[in-house]
Image 1 (cartoon, one colour):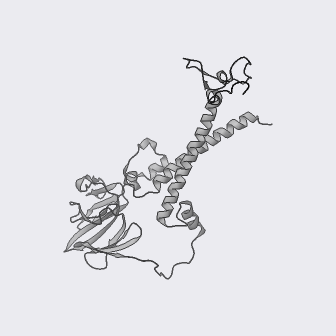
Image 2 (spheres, one colour):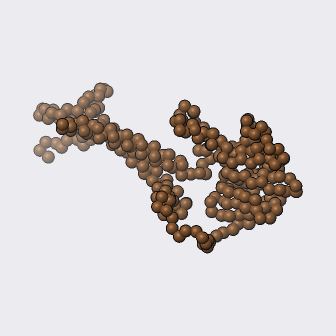
Length: 294
């Protein structure tokens, strides 16, 4: 059975519009997800009825990613994630939010426990530098590296010290009793033995798909953003091209004085006794007709 050509065109057109909407969603969300430093993406909440059943299963995991326990009280834990910081004193049955100074709300990325003068100190790595908690659940104060994205910390090799990574690139160490003395360790081309000389095809395709397979993280981020903008522009202009073409084909503004009516295009030839500017749509009559005999 032969499909009607008009139906095939309509079917193709609607498939194109659906694909354009999906490209727009991919482009916009891709730009957002490419920037871990945008704190509001991690802390802005959506309505529960927006979530699918599969997303509801993982909802509790987005609250507590990192947990540290009080060595003096096994019932007291501190939990944190990109969404904030909480404490429980009954082994997780109930949780209370812990507040940062001046109503700040950084993303919590790691914990480290160290001993300072027989006192257990909790160091908190965030997207806004390092913070410390002298007492378990006590007041939080700023430690060092304001405004830095600290993605990892761990107790250091010496007492009172920690080691961490600044923005996935620079390793640093510091003594918490002298936080102004920060030592940065730069590794241009480290030599690490025992690692494989190749990567799996899956890993290569994974990094290539997310834009990190060929260039550095900074340049890859810019390339990904450009690709997201290009997809969005492609989708929007494709929709406009379809809509405006449809609109121009079906309607025209009447050129009669004082008339606001919208009339369909005429397909027949204009009468010989009427000026061409009175018959053609306004967009085709932008230029006045040439005088006869010119």
